[in-house]
Amino acid sequence: MDALSLLNAALNQCAVVIDRDGGLLLALLTAGLVGGTTHCAGMCGPFVLAQVSARLERVPLSAMSEFRRLTGAAVLPYHAGRATTYALVGALSASVAGHVGALPGLRWLSVALLALAALFFLGYAARGALSWLPKAPSLGSNGVQRWWSERVSGLARPLFGNPTGWRGYGLGVALGFIPCGMLYGAIAVAAASGSALTGALGMAAFALGTVPSLLAVGLAGHIAGRTWRTAVARVAPAIMLVNAGVLGWMAWKLVA
Image (tube, rainbow, N blue to C red; front, side):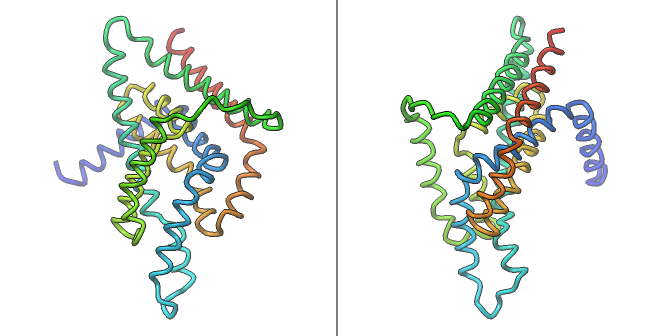
């Protein structure tokens, strides 16, 4: 089978997955859009701005152009690297969940994962809708999560010096392993599919959803990111509520 035939077969398989699991993919895409504006812009914005500064500082003033500025601020290799990590994690988690769920007595696993993700998005919607309430006191930071984030950031730090091309891609791959709450919910949804391809496409859709807010940060700094975040935050609870409903309906269909 030649390369063109393989590509055609792969595209046909992707089309089947999109037709079959379109609701799940759309839920992850919208979760990325909302999470990107309300969470990722603040958490990952400094990483984006550091890359933009490093990339543009290496361009001589005589060679600077609007195109160079835009491509430097977009940090597309970084986003491609993040999407790669998310897709691999989605494929792995879905594959493991699929094999475990096939065992006798464990067919409820996909239902449980979908229900868990639905509750996560429902809580996110409630928190957004009631953002005017005083925040509850913290019960303490997660030491393991902090330790892991520091290790990942430390390993990726040398790549910040010249985050272009494959170095920028590698930086995205590395920083894609930094844990966060939104990522946990997205992985639960991807794993519930039980299909490696669906899990990969779902997490790629989630990554794609996070890109617009980070592009805004890279192009115009944190001010643009905050403006975009404020606009989306007004409708975020409704979007996440719809996501929770879709995932809950999917869980119900599995047991009905």
